[in-house]
Length: 217
Ligand code: DQA
Image (cartoon, rainbow, N blue to C red; front, side, top):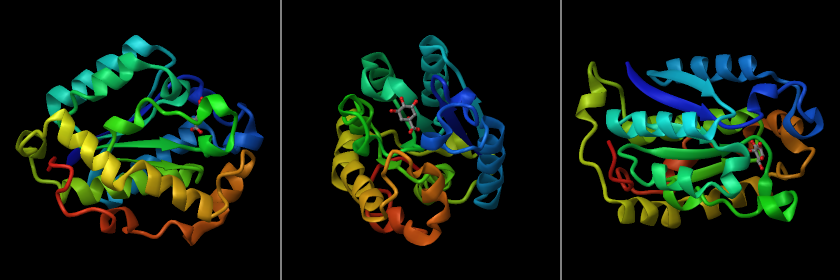
């Protein structure tokens, strides 16, 4: 079964007690369990990790690049300022989807800029735990069905320029727009967004891009 890394940055281990009006009441363990279950249904094996340490997160990103492992990443506060994380992700050799529980675009201005978005295939924000589900579905579409030993058959790595191009063409802007349309982007919206259910159209991310557009399989 093909592996996907679900990486989470600082303070996300505090979910459940951390600003529940923003991030909802689910704990990190709830999130991890949900990701593993969703991934399994998609024929993927989710390895869900969290760290407050930038160095450790960089090591995991390098591991993903070396192993051609697709990544769902919530960079948390690193989103807004970590050029080291961006540079590490620019070396990626498999799809990358940036996720956020809340909708940073609807919050304080320092959250409006993501230094990560430009090296991701796309960004999904504002839907609470559903952001992760949609991100895993996007990864499933991008990598196709798992094969035994699939990581070794990941296909041709695309250059950083191609990866950034795919992100610009089909990624962050559209995903953020969907969040706004669904009204999920309010700071208090994470819990409500989860309940608003069907606003994220299954398979929508796949329709936004040409098959294999990101160049990673
Ligand atoms: C977050 C949004 C970031 O701005 C914030 O620093 C986080 C969580 C989210 O999931 O909504 O830690 O990434």
